[in-house]
Length: 426
Ligand code: AMP
Ligand code: GLY
Image (cartoon, rainbow, N blue to C red; front, top):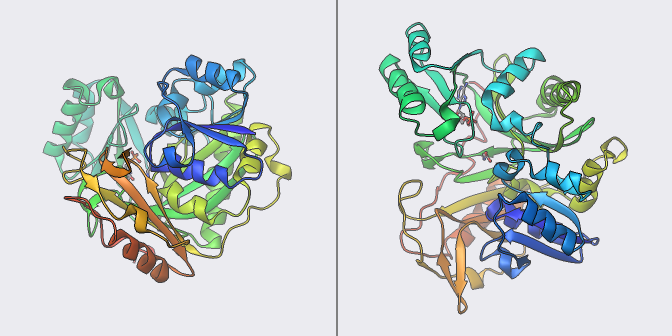
């Protein structure tokens, strides 16, 4: 079978790498891909927001399965376009993707179906939102309604900050139309955990839990980024906690979406806070997480093509249990100097060709190859991933590899997994 992956980051490199391990796959294309993906797949330059051109490509090349990485094409209706043309595609349609593309939709949906989440209020004018902020308890969280590249949720410590954030979002339009509406919600504390699950409209099956590290610097300090590293599985999403998550969050979400006439297929990503009152949803994403995918998929033993085809053809209920390696995976993001602010690209990378560890893989997020030389081509450059019997061994393995890779100004966190040993909410 020929497979097409859409996207260009570390997540997509991981998807291509994993899909390629399936005996069913004869050839993999990636649109647009990146330097690393280009080593193992055929990269094709089509705009990822051009659903028609992508469907034309899939039809012309007899693609048996298309897998979408980022949220924007899903929110734009790529699945609807492929389905209309009877092309097999893995992911939710435009209506179902609203679970991520509109935070107002997502929160109102959760309220309706009693899915645990922070209490919230929605506002369509800055004056009303600011008025409400006079009476809330701080810290509080202000969120732009629409897609804001992961930057649309801001924790505010006092009224002045809240006022500034509301004005930035609703009046200065720092996130554009995503700021037509804002939510003000209560702050939740606890361990944050990422749960990805696969769904076929009726059945939902969770993957192993993982934990992202969003802040730029050690100790969770500094600005928010796309993710500086992750590990999988976590020790606090115990069997019991996973059961609660499945029963109170994942299953009611899939059942609720079906009742709303938006059968949810593809990956459902739940960003959760494990609070003393149980797991609560911070956000839903309608796609694989990045960097979480880089640590979850290396541990998956089940054939990913089989699994995705079961989602596409509504056959997850008879698919059987997922098989996992009994190991821990760690990913350390190596980023350009200045990221997530301004950074330069075109910086020479050395050491990539010397990595020989078969329990390590370097996923590329932003690289370019010119005449056998590697150069940086983005903010997040590489996701160095390794797996071993336990977290400590996996960390040693990954940091050994990280230390072999060099580029000027390379930034990475040295404390990935530091929350792992801490008990929940103590
Ligand atoms: P979101 O875009 O909604 O995922 O939010 C981004 C990040 O903001 C989350 O990963 C959390 O770290 C934080 N966050 C969002 N909502 C809350 C909340 N209600 N309480 C505490 N932290 C939150
Ligand atoms: N790691 C967070 C995300 O993928 O949205």
